[in-house]
Image 1: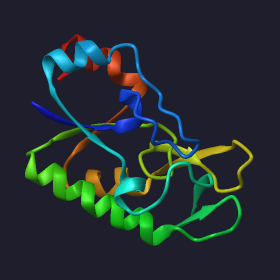
Image 2 (image 1 turned 45 degrees about the vertical axis):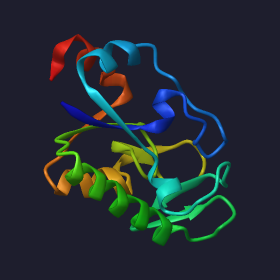
Image 3 (image 1 turned 180 degrees about the vertical axis):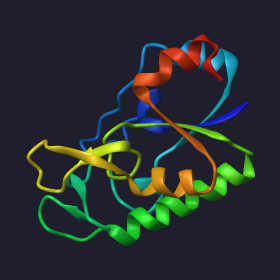
Image 4 (image 1 turned 90 degrees about the horizontal axis):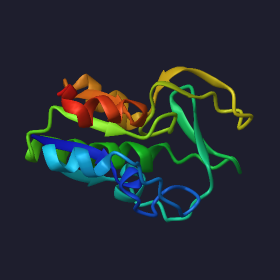
Length: 146
């Protein structure tokens, strides 16, 4: 099965701070699924590293006050194209991200406070019937959860 996955979870240094976050169970997941790495921020034209951003209502705003909503929307659309091209029905995304977070994201105040909500990409993929899983669910996935 083809599975979209946040590239940072594969150890790719594409996060806002220029790092990756390689997960321990990736090898097991790779043995069972064809992993398709994606980074909507990069696909939307943002650099790495980049100023941290958070969702604030329907916008994505950087810590310095720049509105990067258009870049996030563009990146989400590009990932959706890949999801359709590769017939992906699941995505493993970085939790709490303004792009990839699903169910819980930062509140836009840059204080570390969490609120219910979805990142731009997670919301779009979900609307198109793609099941979103966070990195904390990767063990279930690696053990045959899908």
